[in-house]
Length: 277
Image (cartoon, rainbow, N blue to C red; front, side):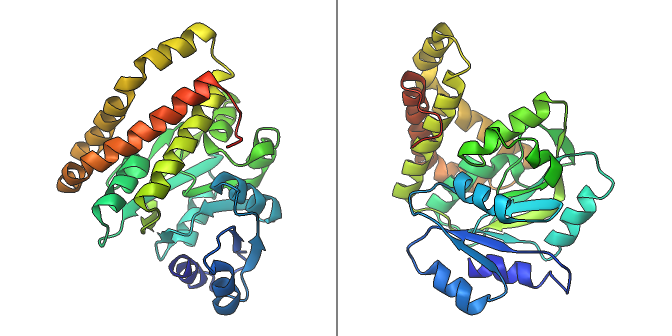
């Protein structure tokens, strides 16, 4: 958290940008923020809340016409704020995402976490229109978020938000100019748990829109899903011609993470529960 906030503080340069931290940790983060960053708005919430719920609380508390999101384990590039504002200026895109790179000190587990979540967003890549940007490094026009208050009732679950925006004809955009660096974010056990609940949320959300026959077909095909997802991740890595060794070393751990997500998805199909964990 300190590295993330320190990077943001250096970029304010007297501008009116507001920084809001929504914290539900029990590791003393709130005390650190209050002591080291007194001009940052701090909101403390229940430890049971998920990151999308924290994002939603921050969005509701913010006032800017451009709302940018990230997490404590992402350190913005030195020109992050400037590039976010430049990308939105005169642009019709309602949401703009940026690159996510991994820290050089990452362990095998850290690489598995990174590749599982962010392989699509590693540099290099050319700017392009996309249907789903990474909320860990994303910014939105306020009016677009305000048009999604019904979908945001249970939190800022970005797949649902992005699906609504694109269904209404709006476009999302990815640019490598807006970058963050991913630091160690999860232990092995915590990420296995996070993947399970994320998969269950995804499965529950889709189950509400799919017929019983289609859901059963997805359940039957579930054993193949981790290997399909691994193949997609590998394609992203090989296409960029970097981090290939990290991928090979992290593959056993990565497959466990993907299997955990798939298990959650299957349970979500069988017993839809919306976004409730």
